[in-house]
Length: 233
Ligand SMILES: C[S@@+](CC[C@H](N)C(=O)[O-])C[C@H]1O[C@@H](n2cnc3c(N)ncnc32)[C@H](O)[C@@H]1O
Image 1 (cartoon, rainbow, N blue to C red):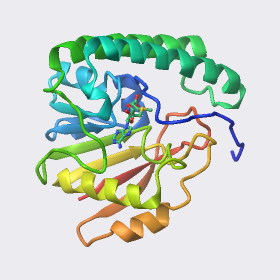
Image 2: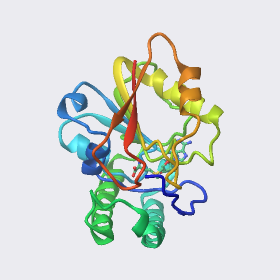
Image 3: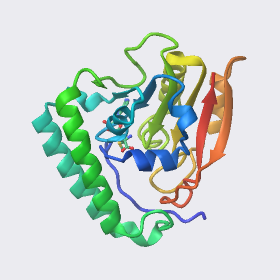
Image 4: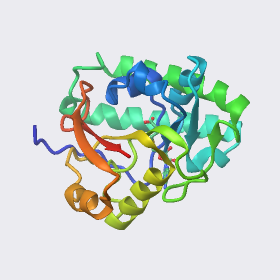
């Protein structure tokens, strides 16, 4: 579907997707989660890492907003959810409703995920939740078996240039273990348009040890967000 969507986004929003949403967007299976340490880059107020750790796996979340106190995070997150809900209402007829039943259900999932995130952030801020921003990650080379980046990189394609994307990918590849997997979703911007520089970007960061694949995901919301990028090191 090539329909253009008019979703106005100034600056980077903070969202709070759940473990289940991550699992479905990235087609995650147990085998992938249990291979070693997981890093969620641009994790925002997502409960993915909290739920992952509760399930016995090992994960770290990174986001520049993790300098916020718990109270500041609660206030900011609640405001962000209200803004997003209002904007989604205006474009709901352009979205694919194969996954969520309706906006009410979407909102309930996000509210629940946000509560779970806040509980975990209260206990683990500065430990599981590390404040950092791409293109610089405060981790040693070859640290993580699985790296995810959900709704940041290519979604904000109009706010960050090719050079930023190049440095960001190189940095995530640096901290990815040999034999590890990285997945990035979605590959479209807010107008439902595919990131136009993907081929150029991948050619520029290609080395003998890196392999790229595009995978279909069963998750549907932005109609053209049908694939994630997988990088194997
Ligand atoms: C739309 S949210 C996505 C949150 C979460 N991944 C999810 O899917 O619900 C985008 C996040 O990117 C973070 N962000 C902004 N600039 C960043 C940067 N340079 N490096 C890493 N994360 C960044 C924002 O703070 C925000 O929390």
